[in-house]
Length: 590
Image 1: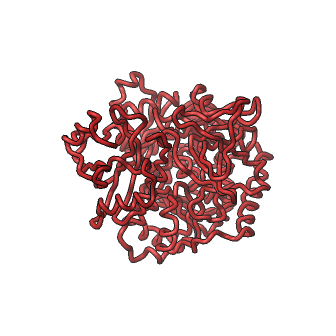
Image 2: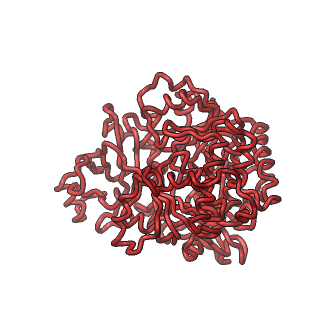
Image 3: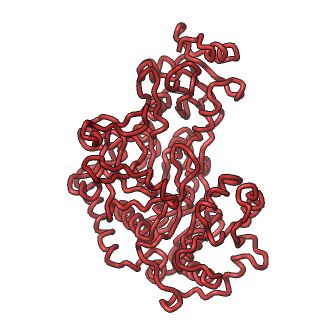
């Protein structure tokens, strides 16, 4: 079941995706918010968006979107105006942004997990004319005064009081808008702002055009071969590109339906999958690890799933996940919200993030170039150009910029946009999008994610890949989850490796050290361990490394059990105040 698919099957996937997107540029005013009425005419009372709290048919979704469009016009919202959207992950969320983008507004999708300074930053970055705020989030706005003295006007949605948006909405007609009411948005117009974060700093707002939305929807509809018989289980946040656009749009444009549970729950996952009769599941890698670490569930092999699609699936999780849950197919992909670089593992090669067949290299021009970890930038040769990596050599992945598939739409901050572009890479005057990720490509052309730039660190004169080390640790019996990062040690060059772990009852620290000795070179073995009850994660289930790095290996900064690799005794020993003092004084042999 985990073997790679035949080349003929992979070729069919590529052809379907190409055919699905071939005619997009020929219809410059056909966008998702205008298409929704055509979909309603075709699929009518078929379910579009499903949840326990609210479900919408295609007809109802189009009607809701049309009401929101007229509501926006009545409130002076026009083409180019930005409106922030801070609402829970429900079917209504999709209807809101479809309606507003129909009149040409740009909707900034705000993370519902942020507040205070982070929320104020997101709002300021968008520079909106107003906000639509779910009733449960309304109390966050008064707290913003220290960072946002003048708050934009906002409309409350979901509290049911007089004057609230959902009460006001019934006044507006639900039929499709006529051209005389509002001009049609065009493919190249901005539609959304989606926030994306790098290795450091506050999130940036990436511009997402109607063209990009349509490209994502139809490309994935082709790759997944979606149909009205499909039902996608999507527990990812709707404010992100994968959860909010890919997982939703790839089903809607083909008459399928999307289940929106609101959040991921490992305990109820299989009950939901079976109850809703889902055929597809949109994943983020960490969700799969959570499922694999969960106790057996009576329904975990009683599903109708035909495919799981997503990104970030760790190589050591792939085969066990597919075997335990009897998953017919996994489609891993790699893409950046704002970028011109994407990969698709349609062959199903375990551990790979994708491969570009020869006949598509002109459409997806990519390069992996040598990267200097210490200087934090790509290496250049005597001619001033970057140096391509050879097979299985790790470097930074770049995507060539162009006006079609390689179009870079940038951020609201022009300086941030320019920092993502690398010039004079393989030829004088060329321009490439920087992914910020280290990858390698094997002799067969498969790409493998190695690490995030900023996560990789140097220790004892060698580069250490946190992703590689975490994978080795996670394969040790008793380890449930591992996060690896570098920490500064007084008087030492580079950063020492540290791993935060969650473990089961059968975990043995001595066995872990033996396991690491067998699987890793000496310099890559973590110097410090931290045992945690759980790993704090972001809304997209990425570990919060910055907090762990800030706390370092100081035993006074945490109540977690800490260990240090005692090289003289070849064992991990408890790291107490005395051991910490020896390390910081430079007396410990690391």
